[in-house]
Image 1: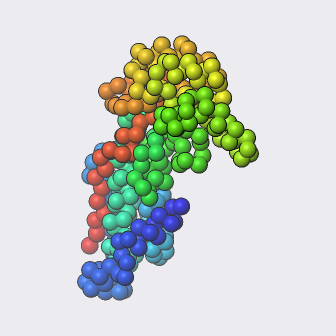
Image 2: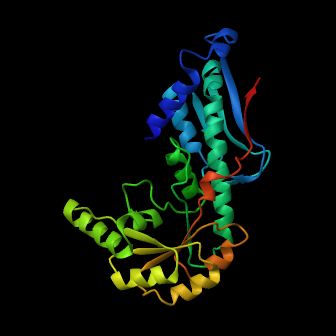
Length: 277
């Protein structure tokens, strides 16, 4: 998937040629460059950047000075690069787009993970990702210390409110999901979203799921809800959880906290790839 993403991204950006570099830079011109950090944060995307260079021009030589997951400060140099000046220029923007985005996600994730490190709660991302780059966004969450909820629609059964409504209720949805897994000979975890303690009671009565998502519950409501949930169920809090509220949610004792904002509304980290002449 990573190579497919890189090849599509290069095709999107270059098509029949980087005509600025082709016109201004001699074919045999060699250059040096370095990735400069312009803002404090958690670095992410080194692995992807190396693969971009390998695919576009295997002769490019990268000397990695900072690693994925490392906290970096303004003025740090993440890596140096040597090779064809044309190749450096042609890959510059793709590498920066990837690393700035990934580093922003990793930085936000680390910040929230650190806030709840005194609890048992695990911070998760969601499927609220940018189409086409989910792979690198979810990798950035992991680099920042968070976990991946599920990658797509194929690796977990996640019964949300619309599924419940279309299926004719919670019990129907759970029974149909389990029947489907049996018929298809698939082993997938089943999670169900509940919107109230009444729905929670119905899930517990029916059984047949692995995790219960308490959607848009307040921390106080979650504390009361957890008193109803048998120990063998995993529990997850979700819905509008922010920097200001995540500690209170984590301290309820819930197992997981999912935050869509980790991937859908983060600020990219300021990085710059500068030629050295």
